[in-house]
Length: 308
Image: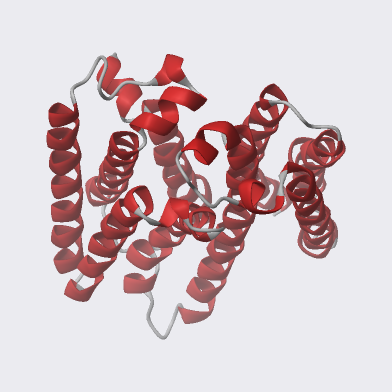
């Protein structure tokens, strides 16, 4: 169990679920011809999960002092798992993940795509060692990594299967994936700032330069509020333009209840948030917003099929 906690198995299951939803709850439900066979797509998911697991492990290795102050009850490296063992786990899962990516890239006749897995692994390492200490850079890096786990579905499953006769359809499918990737990026970026407010005490003692440390919690909550307002307005415009106009009423209700409403709750909550518990609650809600936002692609697809 300690090893599952080390690699954040719940987050990894969420990541795998997200990628499975985009293929089987979106592309396959619309009978889109994809590039990868089922077992090959399973390898893509496995590769992504392993590289993400490596990112969690290396982050815990370099965050031992900070975590000891911010969340001592959750510290694993140096307590239940030795630092040496953690390094072995990091190296093992990352190497296997990159190797699978190399294999898949050659399988679809795009060997250059292997560099994607190398760059993601490198970004995770540099985030743990340097980037997270820089103002907003670490937040942007984490948000980008989650959004790219959405885009990689299109890179490996849509792009290689695109030809002249299906280019219009495939471009539309990739564009929808891009929209979801942007959504995941923005909400996760906000969540990372909220987590920085939650961890401000330990981050300060470690000499980090997060946004709350640099400008204070009060101003950071105002920035988060502005970002939430912008996100909510844009999302409402998107729902109206793509769901309401096309009479996808079930999907519209789903989006309003499980995505927009929680965003509004976060907006109200952040104005009065001051304690670590407040920011922890906001972080959890934002995580669920990402989950339900991603799941909406299945609801939208089912609504489209129902109306057809």
